[in-house]
Length: 73
Image (tube, rainbow, N blue to C red):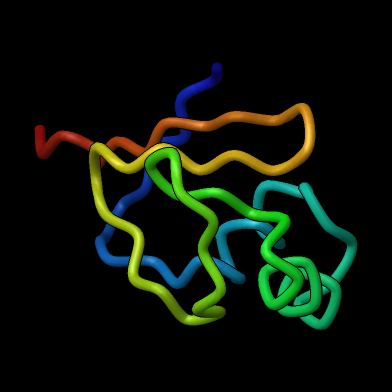
């Protein structure tokens, strides 16, 4: 599992998949989410715009990422 640091929360699920290059486009991200291929915190997630926050774990295929909020310095 790898950690992804976000500067603001929440981030929409489909954007996270796209920004982390787990898919090639926003359209592909929306498609794989609607097909229940993306898991959030151990459960299939079908909401394309689901708000992802620090502590969430997103899994897609062989990739598993943990979300952390960037700490303010």
